[in-house]
Image 1 (cartoon, rainbow, N blue to C red):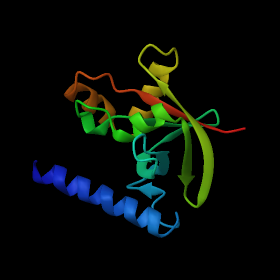
Image 2 (image 1 turned 90 degrees about the vertical axis):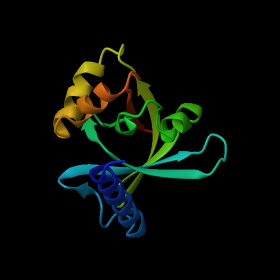
Image 3 (image 1 turned 90 degrees about the horizontal axis):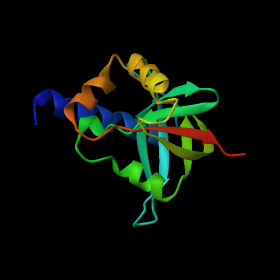
Length: 145
């Protein structure tokens, strides 16, 4: 793994650690990009799993990208929420119960939402999509009512 990738992954781990340990007082923004904590239930373990993810707001929902950096396999958190779409989102210090919905490339909203998240992240998601044959889905996190 190139040094840049190692440094980037380490930065992300430290960022998530600080976000969790300060209960959201530190970590909502990383390099100017909004970040949330997504808590899913492990599909095999049943334990809570937490991931720091960039997001954008859209019509009362939070949109995240299941990119895993362009890896050929999806992130574990995507598999977890597909098995159990009841999740918790933390934005800064606010915890919000949500329902997750996977949006694939055929979804009528996909192109608009992809452009929204990609533009907010300096084209990173287009770069990740070019690295893999796996169609990278989006996930809409909607407040439970």
